[in-house]
Image 1 (cartoon, rainbow, N blue to C red):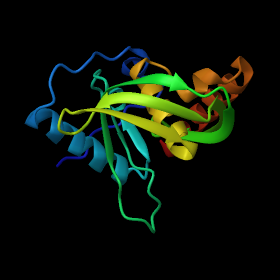
Image 2 (image 1 turned 90 degrees about the horizontal axis):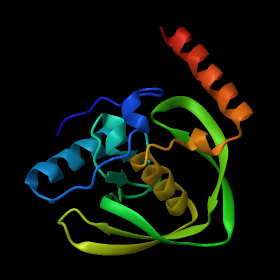
Image 3 (image 1 turned 30 degrees about the horizontal axis):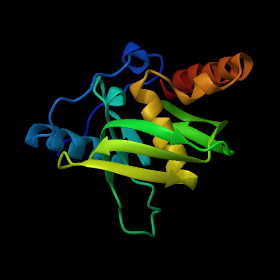
Image 4 (image 1 turned 60 degrees about the vertical axis):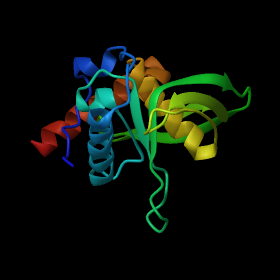
Length: 170
């Protein structure tokens, strides 16, 4: 396995709509394993392929806490087929916007159709934090970042804060 480079905002790959995957094979599984390693190494709970420069519809998620057994999920060509009317507000962060966080309102539950690690068709009813993480990552596949859900003023403030943080990091 290999750690991949995580692209940061405003890299153009993050705004591009990702392409469907045609086949789940050993090469794709190796890439998903690399994505998972990259996510764990960065202390993330989700990672979409565009974040590592690959414009394909692939997501890995693991919302297990540090004191819990890892529980990785691999979603290939995921699509939301149902959203609850009930919404939740949750503070979100993103590996492509390091050290930034903001509250985002999203549906509290979603049903997702996808292919798993072995290419089998699956459905997942995601609720609570898993629903937030899944929607956040699936947004990446359509070139949407969580800051795109914020008001223009909040987004501008967050981007300015990110730029200042980058200057300090060197």
